[in-house]
Amino acid sequence: MKKSLLIRRVSVAAAVVAAIAIIVPLSMTTNVSAQTKKIINSAVEKLVGINNYIVRFNMRTTPNENFATIDANEKFVDGYFEKSFDAPYQWKISKRNGRTALYDGDSVYMWLSDARLGFSMDPQSQDGVLEEFARLLDPSKLLHAELALLASDNLKASIDESGPEIVLVVESEAQGDFTNDYARNTSIPTSDSRRTYVFDKESQLLKSFCVDILSKGRYVTVVKSESITYGETIDWTLELKRPDIEWQGENEDLQNVLLAGTTAVKAVSVIFSGLEKSNIEEVKEAFEHYDIDEIKDRFFGVKVISIGESFKSGLYPGEYVPIEVKLKDGKELKMNVAVHNDNANGVWVLDGGI
Image (cartoon, rainbow, N blue to C red; front, side):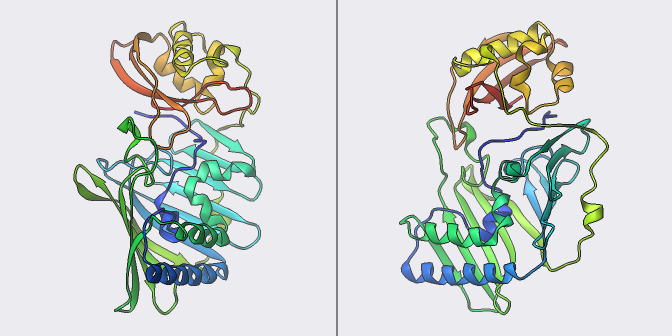
């Protein structure tokens, strides 16, 4: 059960943008590479001239997780992403009964459907909230990123133009450090994936996409488009309405000396020691991505059974720390707590896993 409102620092892939940008390092022949450039170039040029863009998609994940997170063992959750290319520049992304984020032209807001707390952030936070969806916000970046990747030696793709549609299939290997496999298959980049993109031959616009990942020896569809609509009128006065909840800003000046200048394991030990003593003020900065009241409700009075050695996995820039605890109701939990300290003062902050 995850009740958290996390703001991930690392930009890991969400599949809708992958469908447009094809941001994957793979191996390609010269002819296919040239044709792919042509297809992407045409699609981006068409997109630039359109005022609104709506993608409805299904994704194997949980409703409250970050937008990029996938899980081949989960059921599909449906969601949508919509963006205005006209001034004022606005966008919204939402998963049914789960995480929603929007930008109203001034600030970024993110919340969960059952939340009593949401996060308000400055416009510079868009990339961190949207993750790879951020590439959709500037169509020119899509082409530039794709052209850069096509210069690599690691692209494998096929194109079928025999019918009224152009079908592009690309395959990629998982990216990241997998000395420990914990983060494998948790996002598109950390998976061995096969992606299929269908473009309309006449309009050159993307019609649909599907992303499969290799899980337990077989390909499993983890993301697929339901519809992609261009130029549809959007009532932004309705779409940009926010729930009547408490809004919390980001703390950019973390200074807890107990959580800085130490290892990830020692920091996690300090954090859970504070929870055990029901002293949230001692470790409050570690939970800047969370609803503090929910942390208190769930973890106050917790008893630490054991803490293991930290490890890295996938593309996560921080570390994972294995910990086993007993909650005040007697239930025992084994978790891999994600922590990072890539802030100005090197303060360790929880980023997931609880």
